Length: 289
Image 1 (cartoon, rainbow, N blue to C red):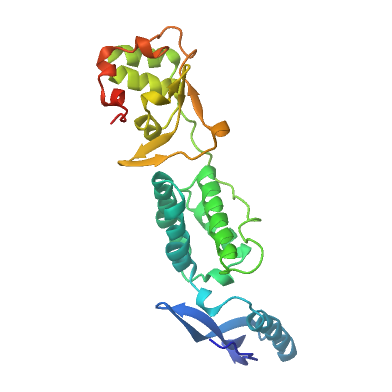
Image 2 (image 1 turned 135 degrees about the vertical axis):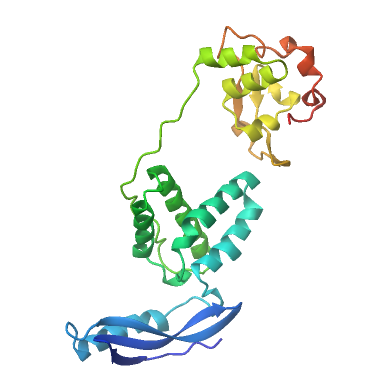
């Protein structure tokens, strides 16, 4: 679409100076030029020469834009058609699910009527402040939302949907309630639970308690990953989807299975694991289910 230089139209309405101009927007998948209006100031505070100068400054940002018209998406359209689509190819399914929850249930309702290329730091700060005012989000949740904003605009800049510095970089986390303290079972409580259940449940509990692995990582454990008293986390299983780890050998993640509990010897050595566990699917190289 050929880019046009425009001077806009200055007019008065309801005690305000307004500038009428055209801007590019993608509507129903097609780039179009639509008429828009921008308030410049009140008639009481601003004379016509001042209004003309304000209009000139604003139109410079429209006339000098270097972004293609095809990138004039709403923030919601960009996140759902570009950001999440790319994340689906790049990250683990469980991580993608958490991104979708943060977007759909938390951030998206505050992004209506925002256009990706026109978002500024003040818009994002207003969003966080509004979320904090609901008292439904703690400080950790707001920090995750800020991180999501930053990732969204990082990709927007990389793909030429946004021009300028990342607007999420300088926003501040507003005052909010702190996250509740995470509860951790004591060693005696862990041993009591292990002793109260039969095999192979006892071994699963022990592995979870003494390695700190997530459920998906425990489901993905294989006997060949157990080496010299340590379990190498090489894959995870989430909702039936297996995700392989792809780190370099020097960076492989190990979790120690020895030394946490001298009172509980079951997982100190593979040879000590009962036959009931050895005969489980994991013994044939599969995962716990």
